[in-house]
Amino acid sequence: MLSFTKAYTYNISRLQPSSKLFAIGFSALCLLPGSNAVASKSITTKSASTVTSTAARWSDYTVLKGDNLSIIFRRAGLSPRDVLNVSNATASEKTFVRMLPGEKISFQLRDKLLQQIKYVISANTTIVITKSDAVESGYSLSREVRSPQASASGTPQVLAVISKPTIKPSPAQPPAATATVQAVNNNEVASHSPPALPASDNSADNSTATPPSELDILLQQQDSSQLENWVYYNVQPADNLTTLFTRAGLTETDVYYVSSATGEQQTFNRLMPGERIGFLIRSGHLLKIQYIVSPLKTVLLTRTDKSNYQVETMQREPVISYKAIAGKIENSLFVDALNAGLTNNMTMNFAKVFAWDVDFSQDLQPGDKFKVVYEEVTIDGKKIKDGNIVAAQFDIGGQSLIGIFYRDSDGGVGFYTPDGHSMRKAFLRMPVEFARISSKYNPRRKHPILNKIRAHKGVDYAAKRGTPIMASGNGKIVFRGRKGGFGNTIVIQHGTSFNTLYAHMSRFNKAFRLGSRVQQGQVIGYVGATGAVTGPHLHYEFRVDGVHKNPLKVKIPKALALDPKELETFKSVAKVALQKLNKLNDEKLASAN
Image (tube, rainbow, N blue to C red; front, side):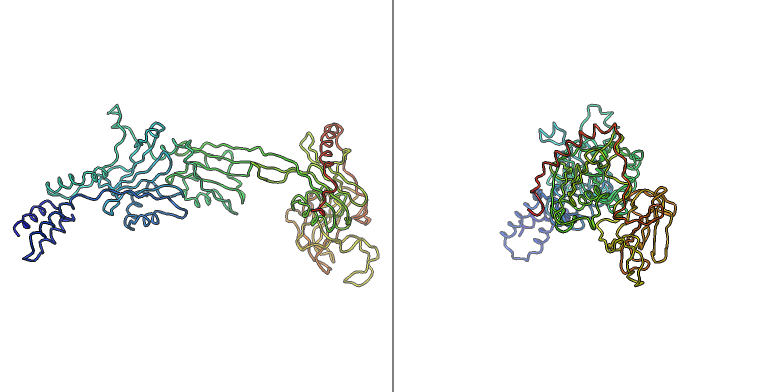
């Protein structure tokens, strides 16, 4: 029993109350009399081994989608208290504000206690967070940056200590105990020490030099491809720069600096829904912005210092190829063109080429044929959009109509016949697209509501309520309002001899008032059922010198031919376009598909 007492006395004098050995010694003190010396000896041996702390252990984790600091700490077996302490220590530097999938984070634990964190934000940069009593927050922050030479040798350089040490007074401890703990836990003490700045040859300069800031270091690394980890947002209706920056976790200060840098270019003045904007953010600092205006145009902002950005506009050159499609009318142009492979938009554009010659509500017959050659715009082999129609042909009613696209020397564009006459006439054949004629011009028609003979001095086009109504020609609105049985009506004067009437509108286009000038094809109102009607339709009248004419048969004045100076150039363009059109095999019809 005497040997046990000596062993206990020796051990307790070297212990602090918090050590595991203290607990074991206390348990040994409580042994009942009569315990044998072997037990005392084994306790002494076990207690001595406890003085040596377990080795530090590293655990590596990869940031997954949806991860945050709490989730990763829980995965590492750490407590909410650890999360709170580390969050508070790194809050000012925004270290963990935006963790991205694929990033690496490692934890060093000793006896289940967190000692150090290494957060790899790029191949060259690691943020190190070390448990330390030398700073008020309890953790010191430093950044390991590998230069190309250091990367080759595998040795990082510590370029900056982010958190400034604030020495806290520690409670007095017995000298012997302090010396013992330092000797036993020498590695732990070393890991708690804040990383030293790189040595300098000039000690005077080293003592006064300001270490580079976190932002400075990040800006120096912008050429590193490993940093290119972007977060993108789609522009929503009513979005502006502030709402997008807020969504990305950025501040009003960031908005101010970017707005100042792009003010002259007005880069972000007209954000449109569907556009995309990307942010490159590291440790809470905005480094780059990528504004994708379209697949062909991107604006890149690169941060050069705290408040300035370099602005670059990048325009990609697309690949333009030609696509040819042929079809045959069996149902309607709209249905058969879609079956042949034309998009909705391209079908509408095809119809507009012949809008002055063809009334699509009554002129089409089964067996009529159509051909079209148009541009297809691609980037990296991916279709971006349909381009212009190069040439179009419509074989209808025994005649062949051909329109060829041409851009003149002044930049004006249009479709022309092969001999250089414009396809555009002074008036459109029908002021609504793809409508159905419900009642033709008839001087002795029986009125469906009044039930008596009354001349029907126009054409009725049945269409869905709200279908756009276009001005059939250039002119001036001389009447806009309610007009008896016509309901909501507009009358347009075209020069001195012609005027057109549009009746039964559900509403007017607010952009045009009485006296407004309108251009051919502009929307002036919408199909409705106002006035004396049985259903929604447009009543359309055409008058020449005040006399009603049948809109379907009236001779429409032709537009002027090409300027003679343009004719030679046009003929060269027309020759190529016709060759592309003629390559289409007439047997390649929609019905064959």
